[in-house]
Image 1: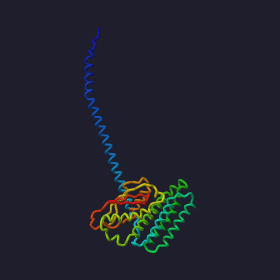
Image 2 (image 1 turned 180 degrees about the vertical axis):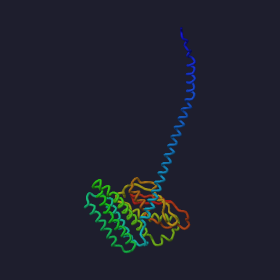
Image 3 (image 1 turned 90 degrees about the vertical axis):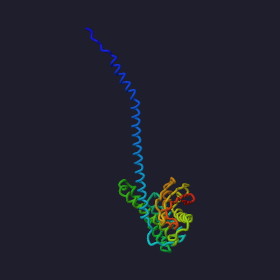
Image 4 (image 1 turned 45 degrees about the vertical axis):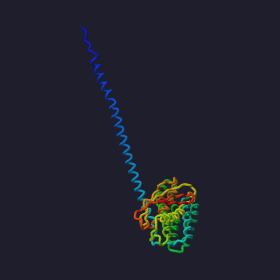
Length: 308
């Protein structure tokens, strides 16, 4: 008995129906997938953007804290002795500070070498301190002498730390702390020089107009800028722009490098020149709001230009 064979056309019809359905919904599925991918991409970019903002905010807060701590830790000693430093003493102090900086930044080949280099800077600082003729000069001379004495201590720790891995673990923290203390002594000396060099009336009598005020600020910063430039960067040919806000009383805030030079030593010297010049003279009496100044430092010719 022959079996009946089921017709194949119903199955073909069903297959064709499903194929048509797939062809109809495929573009929609692709569009949905593309939309989902776009949403995922935007979400990731948004999260990355938020993370960058948080990182930038944290970095800015950290920089502000560091500047505030630096401002506090390098505050000149009291009492104040305005107009008490002779020009020749100021010049000698700047030269000796650079001499100590060179000893501090040098990499000696032996203990004897760095002992000899530091002995010269210590003797020079001692002679400067002994030649002081006013309390303001003695303040500055004492700070530079303390700075000169701190340098060999730091270098001895650095020398000990590289002798072995165990020594590195033991001495590296002490060396960083010593470096920080030496830098603070240097910064305090810079600010003490600027404060004790200003005329007695400059802190009390406000400048008559903003133009002459900017000229006075430029003159103040130029002294510290010339003294803070190390010989090895004086001919670097780079320029650095630092911006800062001056309050009505002459206090300075929001100091930052707006246009880096590409050389860290130049940027550090420019920041130190601004911070060591504070406080600045009070703003003109007719000026109520703070002002933002833009200082362009050019080490090649010890140039400095300040604009509003």
